[in-house]
Image 1 (cartoon, rainbow, N blue to C red):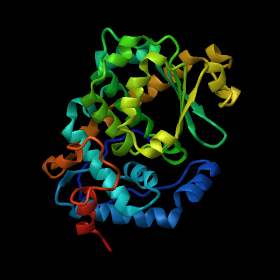
Image 2 (cartoon, rainbow, N blue to C red):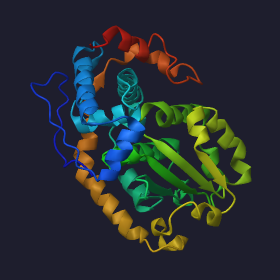
Image 3 (cartoon, helix red, strand yellow):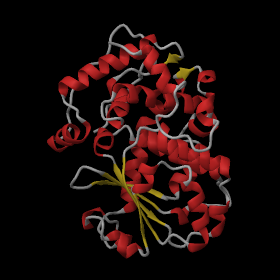
Length: 328
């Protein structure tokens, strides 16, 4: 379920806070309790503590404090308040440090619009375990026009828009990557610095719960590029990657009801695309308004100065600042 679009305040000390009500199906309440340690009492206490922490934070200047935004970080870190606050800091610092990658994510921008119309991405739906299923078909990307920055910005837009679904925050998602007929140029575009920025965002800066990443027909000529990119991936992310020799083999891991017509199922990808485009249009102002948040990035430059920074090992950075600001 997506909260109706609204103009969210970025005042870090608002006069009042919104009241959250859990409205998802019972399946998600059970997943939240069993996997994330979430119940009504813990949720309210955690939101209160996180809001107090934001209010007294010396480096955060402006930040959303509504429940729909903060819960994505609390759920991402299974209600560890220090880790959720650290994740929020890192997210804000990432956006400010690399604005050309992660800000002004406008679905109506001509470049974004063209890549979206190529339908290389599809939001399929939820499986029986509440996990969102998405499909990427990289062969549909125009590699002669769109390089790493454009590709990364598209993924950033998709992530921000997908995080609007509470089902995704709680259940996480599964990815189908169909590399059939991809060309060598696609893999030669990415430089090491591009990989480092992008993979850090995927690994440590966006509050997303990867459950499984299935890839099929990955070309042998690009294996060395993939291995290089994975040097920037966390061990947890690597564990969730499953490679398949054929698309047929990958399809067996998904319920037939979640397969598009071109994969032997009944789903109309064009109809799915129209629905997702409407979601993007409906949330356009909300996603663009994320740019109004602000943090003093001079305190976080060390986060991106090492090539293989491991989660939760920054003593003087985000973790250290939480310890200094811890709320009772």
